[in-house]
Length: 226
Image 1 (spheres, rainbow, N blue to C red):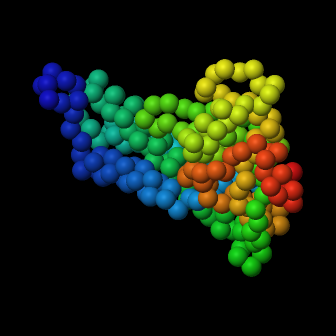
Image 2: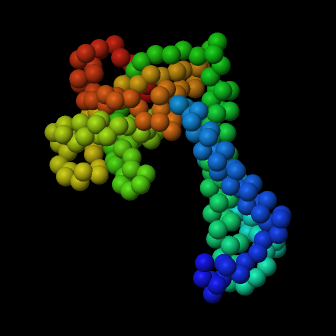
Image 3: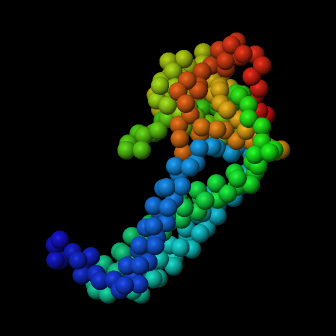
């Protein structure tokens, strides 16, 4: 490392290194929890993301103070470490671990096995979009109950090649549906709580998305939640 680099002159105390380890472990813990998140809850609304944001903000401030007080060396390097590096890791750790923990707890409480019914049904798609880059994804948003679900690339390409007749869009990154396409999914309902299986941090299975008319022609009894 270049000896003139500000960070090359920064030294952390044992407490400072412990703190960085803790916030790093939070991010890893949240990443592991994602493996167990196979569902997306549609109703009721919960405050998990908001709580994660609040906790992440508090943790970022605390981390900045801890790292600054537990470091020595060039002031510029200490400021970069305490005001940028530590808060970013803190927010990431809280967003992953707190949000995923809250999601798993909420779904455990909302769907007791003895009161939960599983059935197949349709979700109306309001729009679809794709993102690019390292974390490329293909997504649908639903109506009238809003959700954002990951789908396979093949299902997205099906939508591209079967745009609704009045959709004049040509942007491959955006598909208008407004109920023209549907997602055939497995639901679970317990009282007022409703969730989609095989979703969460995973893609919906291949063949989930087709035109609503094709699904209804094959099985007119398929319910659609409202």
